[in-house]
Length: 328
Image 1 (cartoon, helix red, strand yellow):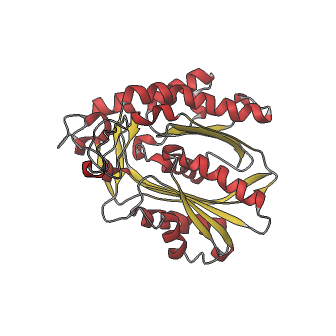
Image 2 (cartoon, one colour):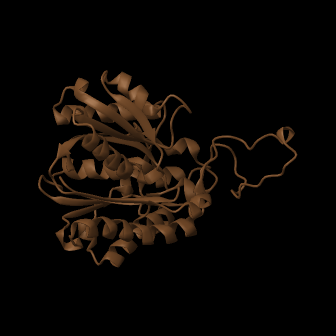
């Protein structure tokens, strides 16, 4: 069994932050950022909560799908920037869009979240014959977790959301999900302080670098090395399951982290960059929202059409990675 994407929608915050804007308060410039990342600008959440951006994307996806929102059986939110420790972003979206018959929960697989979300949606549809539709929503506000004095990291990220309504189908579908926890310490943000000293006399070191609470830390070199190997593996792992090759794929939609990473992955796969959808120049890295934002834009522009075979490949904190091959 596979899945069919019935409709997609997206939302990005009203305000944008260009490279020229950044250089007003960060020691950097447009040329330095463009040549190293491929990013020119990004959208930054102001008043918009993470759940609100997800709500807007979800409503647009439901409208494009042409379905009754009450027939959605499950809402999966993929985010690392929830507005609350609890409740889930998915639960808030469920109420906001009127999906009164849906279950709801969040997935934290970082930038690979949408790939994990689609696989989870497929498994729920396969195991629940009465479930008609699943809504997968990726919504992120990374700008609220950045160290704006760290020019190697703060220039990379932006905010936004994208959503997809899916149903079961007999279309092509193959997935490959993995995680390498040994790299967890190279990309993280603490949500809680360590246990107070008075609780125990035991000195415990969790191995994570000491960084401020709610602030993203990234070891750029380690992540780059991991990503350039993970993206090709994610595709090949999914392709081998269904006996297809890179030549069978119409378009690759990778996680939009860094243009150099995408170019290196394309070279390793032996695929022309013409087959890669790239949107990071105007969105930056929006974590789990980056793949669906790119996919939705390519669909809206008529680049990706019905019947095409596409490969969604991502990596992120965890370190997670994964690939999905499906027919649009």
